[in-house]
Image 1: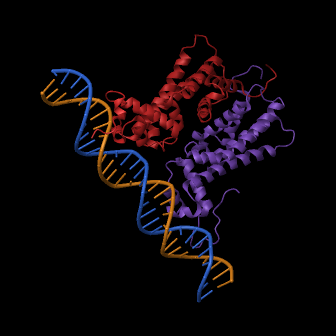
Image 2 (image 1 turned 90 degrees about the vertical axis):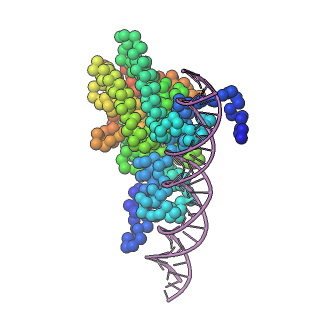
Image 3 (image 1 turned 180 degrees about the vertical axis):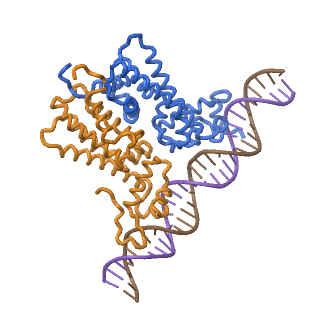
Length: 209
Length: 209
DNA sequence: ACGCCTAACTAACGCCTGTTAGGTTGATAA
DNA sequence: TTATCAACCTAACAGGCGTTAGTTAGGCGT
C-alpha cells in the first residue's frame, strides 16, 4: 500500500508544484525540445506528478502552450519598455535603439524560458494557439513600430525604409540568435553591442570615420 | 537536378510518384506544417499512395527528413556559389555581398520547398537527424566564411568583426524572413536589396552622403 | 470532529503514430 | 508465353498521444 515513499519523504508533506510550477517546466521543455515532442506525460514527469493531474490546473495542452506563449511575449515587452523608459531625458536616438535591442536580446538569451520558448515553438503550434497569441504579439510589435517611427520622424533613421519591414528584420535577426548563441563564446551583452553596431552603421568599412 | 516535374513514361495507368515525388511532397508539407505534425500517412495521402508504400523508397521517416534537409542546404549552397562565381572579374566587394545575399534569399523565398523546409524544421527534428545534416551545413557555412574573410582581407569590411559571428548574424537574419515574408507586400528581390542596404550601411541617416 | 477545498492519483478511452510482413499489380524482357 | 521486377497495397502490430472520470489524501476553518 505505502508505495515509493522516497519521493514524498523529503518534503514532509506534498511538494505542490502547482500551476506555476507546471508552467515553468513546460516552458523549459518546450524551449529545449520543441512543441511536438513534448507530451503531457513528459511535462508531468519533469514536474514529479502524473499526466492526468495536469488537468487540474489546465483544461488542455493548448491552454498550457498558449499561456507559455503569452507570458513569453510579455516578458520581452516589459523588458524593452522599461529599458527605454528608464533612459535619462534627452538620450540620443542611437542610445535609445541600443537600449531596446539590448533589452530584447537579454530577455531572450538570459535564462527566460518563456520568451525563448515563444520564439522557438510559435511556428510549431496549432493555428488556433497562434491566433490566440497574436494580440499580445501585436502589442509588442506596435511598441517597436512606435519607437522606430519616433526615431525616423526626428530624422535619425533613413527616411526611405518602411517601418514595418525594418521592425520585422530587426526582431527576426535578434530572435535568430537563439539558434546559435553560446554564452561560452561571448556574453549576451557583447552580442547585443555587435548587433547594434551592425544595424546602426553596417559592416562596410568607411573612409569618413 | 532541379524540379522533378514527375516525368513518367506513358502516364497511362499508374501514376508512379516514385522516390523523388514523395520527397517533393514531403518537403512541401514539412515547410508548411512543421516536422511534428506531418505524419507518413499525410505524406502518403498527398502523394496519392498508402503509408506503407513509402517504405519501398525510404527506410524510415528519419531517412526522408534527412534527405529533405540535405537537399535544402545544397540548393542554397549552389545558388549562392553560382551567383558569386558568375560575377564579372573585378566586381567590387559590395556587389559581391549583394549577390550572395540575393542568392540565399531567392533560394529561400522563391518556391524551393527544400531549402525553406530546412530552415523551418531543422530545430524540430531528432538530434540524430540534425547531426547527419551538420556536414552539409558546415560546407555551406565554410563557403560564407571564406567569402567574408576575403572581403575583410581586402579591407572592405570592418576589421574588428568576428567572421563567424558575422556569418551567423547574416544567415540568421536572412532565414528569419521565412516567418513573415509575403510576396504580395514586395518581391524577394526588393527585400534582398533592403537587407543588403541595411547590412552594408546600417539604418542611421548619415550626413556624409 | 466535521466537511470542504486543493492537489494529486489510477485506470482507462479512442485515436494516431512509425513500422513490418506478405500479397497484388502492370509493364517490360526473354 | 512466361518470368522478372519495380511500385504499390492490405492489414496489422505495439506504443504513445491527449483526454476523461472517478478516487484519495492532507490542510484549514468552523
